[in-house]
Image (cartoon, rainbow, N blue to C red; front, side):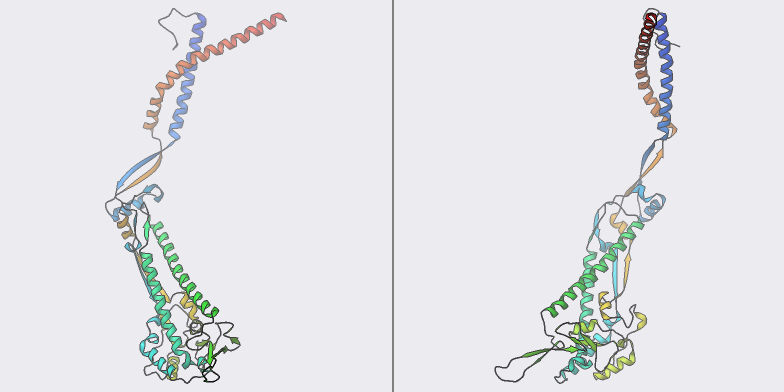
Length: 398
């Protein structure tokens, strides 16, 4: 077989015919090698296949999500931002004491009357009767402040915008929402406690005198026109209020969990609700203040907090027993509302693709070989011939 014979020329010489046949053999050899490489390469390479799936409902979307891996399917949202309130519902459950009789008007009015009936005395700040109104007034104030702080933070949180260009799969959605909630709850508590500690520090640092005279006693040595007003720091146990606002001691008479100290708010934070969980103890303190109506004791079974836990710990938790929340993935889908999903798969080339690729390259490959091979064969034999002549000449000289 001679592929390089030229019919329009004179018959080739023996040497020319030899070169043409050698070129033909090399042509078929290289062609077979090239085709083999092409077949192996095209059959091993992977291809990306894209498929669009129209989404008609949330139920159908769930079927699609379960059928395809989340990493290979993309569902673009028709809108990319929406409020958290469209798929979040939050409801804090506060400690029962914030809705109990102990912060009601009847109880506080009774405590205030008893406080006003006390004679001015240096021992009043150390008695239960002298400090009970300030204690329960602080309790009511803290309940109102924490409730308002939580509700304001919740409203701000729900008004935040969630931005996403594609529909999140349900697992990732749940993980993100839990992260958002934990961050929200810790931020609310940390901000409130930081402000509270700042106020307490300012009161102590500036030497502010409590309106209940619990940290500094004010007295006049005489009632003359030019009389000088003197102050004297209160002492609780071995602690002086001039040095620290955290001085506390048990009240007189002793009430379980109830302490008195320099500042009513500090005393409140360092007390416990131990007595308020016991009806006998509640009856006892009611008798101290001559209460007309005895408040109902708290129910231990309705709180996650221990009865001997410091009030400060409960305030740090914003008086929250638990969070009731509903996070709807379906509502999130309605906000995102993807109309279609694109699925990308990676597959090995099929036989049709291999054949098509080879046929498309075959024509160019044959033309290239037909042009290059005769030139290469002639060039190789020319070089070989010259080397033989040089060797033959050297042998004759020797």
